[in-house]
Length: 371
Ligand SMILES: Nc1ncnc2c1ncn2[C@@H]1O[C@H](COP(=O)(O)OP(=O)(O)OP(=O)(O)O)[C@@H](O)[C@H]1O
Image: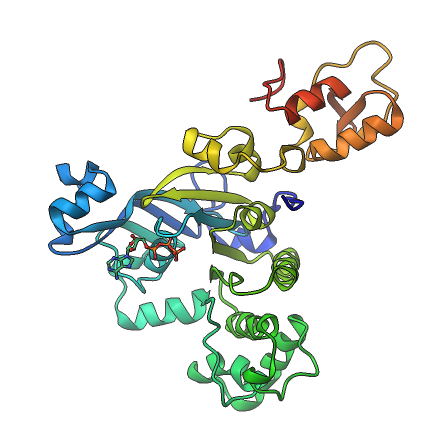
C-alpha cells in the first residue's frame, strides 16, 4: 500500500463570500442536488417513486430493462471545496457528474447552481453554464491534434468570442500556470500524456469557471505522472480556492485530494464525509471493506486519540495542531518519550500518548475521544 497523505481541510476562500450566506450563516452551496435520479431504458421516467425504484440493480434490469445509474442522490457542493465522487466502475460517478451540467439529462429530482434552477435553463443558458461556470476536464483531454499547445488552450476563449490578442495573453498565462512554458508551439502529439493533461487543464482554467469538473482525468497516466498531476491540482486549489468536483475510482487519490468524498454504489451515495470520517467511521460493511487497507495513521487525526491532561502534562511535551495525523503524533511521542499536547492556538485541547495512538491505528475505539 502506498503512502497516503490527506490535505488539511480547505478554509472557506474569500471568493466564497460572493455566494449569499444560507440560513445558518454558512456560505450557500455552489451545487445543490436533491433526490436526483438518472434512469436509462424504456419508460425510464416511471421508475423514480415507483415500487420498482427499490429493486436491486440486477432485478430492476431484468424486470423493466432499465438501469438506475443515479438513484435518489442528494448533496451540496460547498464553495471552495474539492468534492470527490468515488466508487467502483459502473457505480454511477460519470453519470452523476454529467447530470450537473445536463450533459446527461436527469430523469427526476432538483438541481441548482448558485440558487439557479439548472433544470429550467434554456439552451443558451446551459451553454453559458458549461463554458463559464462549470467547465469539465476529461480523461481523454479532447485536444485538437493540429493546433499548438497555446492554440488549444485559447480554443475555449475563441468559441467564447474573445479577441485574438486577449485570448493569446490569457492562454500564455494559463500555460505558465500549469508548468508548460517553453512548449507553447508543440502539437499535442509531441507531448507526453501528463503534458497533454496539463494542456486540458489549462484550457479549462482559461475560461475561469466557478467550478472545475474532473472526470477521472488522471486514470490513463502512469503512477508517477499521476502523482505529479495530483500535486498540480492541490497547488492550483491552494492558490485559487476554486471549487472542484473530482471523479475517481482510486481510493488513495480520493483521500489525497478530497475535502469531502461521496462514495457511490449502484447509483446511490453510501457515505458522504471527510476522508477522516470515511476511514474512521465507515457507514456500513461495504465502506468498511472499501477502506480496509488504508493506513489509518496517515488519514486519521489526533482528535481521535485525545485524553485529558494529567498533572505535569499541561506545560511539557511536544505540541501538535488538532489536524496533525496519528502518524505525525506517533513520531513526536516516540522522539520525546512522553505524551504530546494538542493545541488549538494557545488552547490545550488534550494530550495523546503512545497507548491511545496505537489503539487508534489498531481500529479500537478510544474512550473519551470523539467517535
Ligand atoms: N447511455 C447509457 N445507457 C444505458 N446504461 C448506461 C448508459 N450510460 C451508463 N449506463 C449504465 O449506468 C451505470 C453507471 O454508469 P457510469 O458510467 O455512470 O459509471 P461510472 O461509475 O462512471 O463507471 P466508470 O468508472 O467505469 O466510468 C452503469 O451500469 C452503466 O452501464
